[in-house]
Image 1: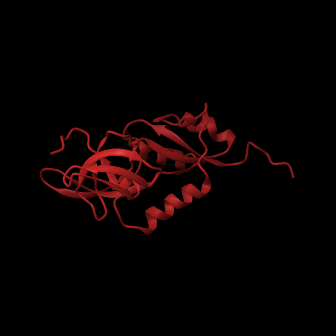
Image 2: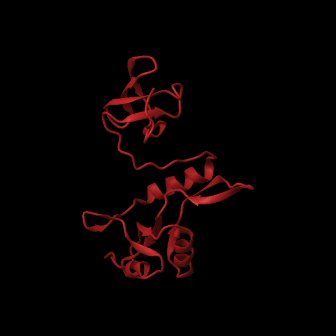
Image 3: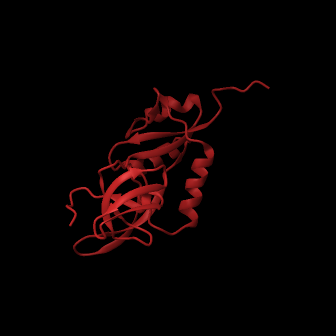
Length: 177
C-alpha cells in the first residue's frame, strides 16, 4: 500500500500573537482543523474580586494536527505567527506526547508551571517542592535531568539530591542571605 504523504496527519506547534491562543484555537476548529490548546485553571486576583479563569498552559503556543495540504491554511489563520521549527522544518510532536499532556491535564488537579529555564552552575535557585522546600542556594553542578548538587547557604553545606527540575526554581533578582 502506498501512503499518500498529503493526507498523513502530524502534530505541530504554532506560535500565536500575544494573548491570542484561545482565539487561534477557536478559528482553527471553525476551519475544520484539529487543534489542541492545553488550559489550566488559575485563580486571578484583582483589587475588588477573585475569579477562576482558564489560561493557556504554555503561553503563545497552540498545537495542530494537520496534513501537508492544511499546512498553509494554518499559517493564513489570523493571529498565527509561524510554526515552531527544528532544523528549518516545522517541529513534529509525537502523538503519545499530546495524549500524555491531555491525560495529565484531565486527570490531575494541580498547578503546572512551565519553565524554559536551563539551570547552569553558579545560578541561584530555591527549592519549591519536596522535603527541602524553601531552602535557597547556588547550583554547583547539574548531574543529569534529575540530580543537582546545590550549595545550601542556610546550613553551609553542599547537598546532592535527586529531584525533578520543576522542584527547583531560579531566583531572578533576589540576593541570598
